[in-house]
Amino acid sequence: QGSPDGEFSVSVGVPFAHVRWFQGRETTERARSHCPDPDCCRLPPSDLADRWEGLAWPSARPHASLLATLPSGAFPGVDQTEVLTFLERHAPIRGAT
Image 1 (cartoon, rainbow, N blue to C red):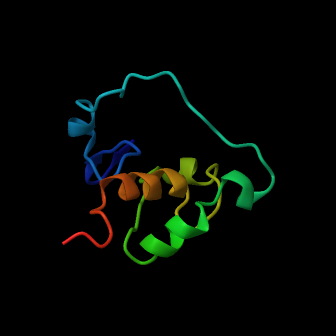
Image 2 (image 1 turned 90 degrees about the vertical axis):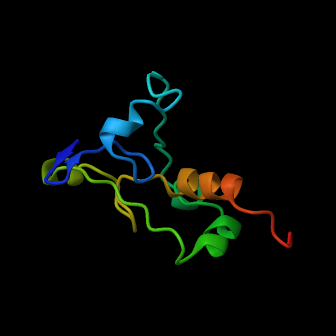
């Protein structure tokens, strides 16, 4: 997606020029929830949301015309569960010194 700052993909803050090197970028597997209950699968689990509250601020950079079609929420166009699960996988182990 183009922007005044260059081209970006929906990734965790990586410019488009660099995301092309990500493993799996060519995947054809895509997922989208059609569930009407946000607590079921659109919102991250509460333990992840509580742990990362105020520490992660994901941002999609779509054109305004695309933004209108994205699901609403604190971070339109960003799957918060995916972001928080990624952070959890890469976070230091709690209680480790």
